[in-house]
Image 1 (cartoon, rainbow, N blue to C red):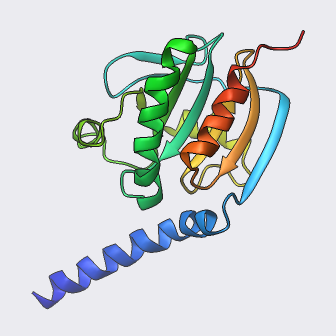
Image 2: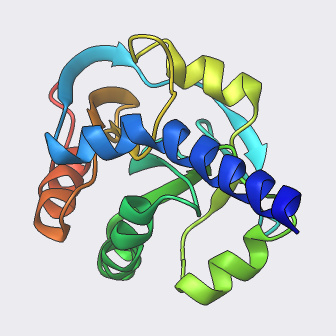
Image 3: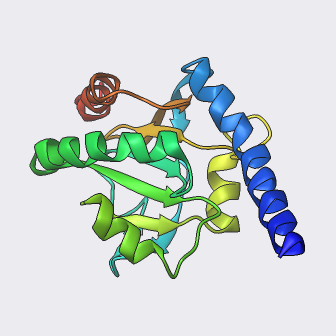
Length: 182
């Protein structure tokens, strides 16, 4: 019993140590916001946990936010109701969230999506996706939450590390949906 308890405590400590960068990121909110309006958005293609195809090509012409999260991350979980509400509000106007589950359990993700009321596509972030988006973050995507805001023109507007409020999300959504200047 003592061995089991020690293993359990060690596992919890390891998870906590892995989450500390994210906790620190939220405490300084946002840690870093990078404006990148001249860069093309990272390309990706995947099947969502819900079964649909999701790719940068199918999102062409839409504003969208790619949000890396973990079901194990308390700050990520706190953002989900706001994102679901904003998805409902802006989906018909040409916007969507794309959830990227980071270092998560694929088998339990459908239950998590249902329990949290997630109404936008969720993809399991594999190495190709992490590499594609990680180029725009110093050291790569290593903590969550982190979001990538992409406008209708397929340009990466910003990368923001740390949790967002509903008001902050709404401001970012508005920016992604602006008509591109030509």
